Length: 368
Image (cartoon, rainbow, N blue to C red; front, side, top):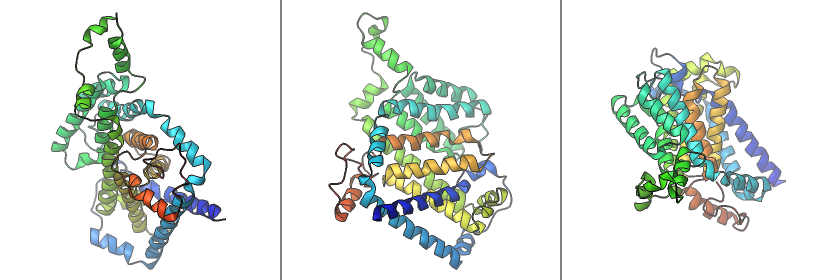
């Protein structure tokens, strides 16, 4: 009975996320700059002074708490969860390919569309962006292309700060590619096999030091990739939630009015915007700290998917990197320095189910 009840709570929480997420987009992409909205203090007072809003927030907090306890108590008893984790981990050989596609495709689109990483930064840098994207998509000089991408973004950020922070997920993509490498399939893997095979023309270059060799010498292993992705992806979600929703509520309120979101869920526009920002902030902090990482990444993926179908004129290409990075965390889990490795196992132990973990699961992230 308790297991069935926990499933219902989880389903309800998921449904609430899906309903509230269409406003959780890059609001600058779908609205025009106009008159400023209410001041931050006035906006927050308008939300928190309404008893109905307070009741909704309290109910949501209770629901999330119950769902979390239910997940800790029963999640590892579900065979579906065990099989899902095992299957996701089996995709590790294709992680580099996933990151390359998720970063290269939108970068290629940005170059041909005439904007610089973010659709709201109109800078012509076609040759640079398309060249980097080409190398990433084909897996040619992949790590060098990732370094070039990081440097290009850094230079652009100095000239378009803080606007370019809207696309800070590119940093996570470039760093992930730099650490993981090209993966398979890729041109670099083909060249590598030619180099290590005796009798080939490429074998003459066997002694050439690569970026991967340098990283290995400095002790940078592929296992650190989830940490780097988490840091910048989590910061991106949290930043968008706070700055685009709470600190720029006027533009966010335009989104609510433009798409008639109050007809979907009959709450005040201010509550819509506050809830969307809160959802992005919580997802971002969970990803950043490695707390229930796969679940948080899955929630982020659902938010992006609902935005895709809920906002018809939102530039989909600009969100491809976010889709790819959340998918990458579904595969890798939290990685090192995460709450999933420290606090979560202790919580499960207190509940008394430390023996319920599937022995074939990743011991480092059993409950993410």
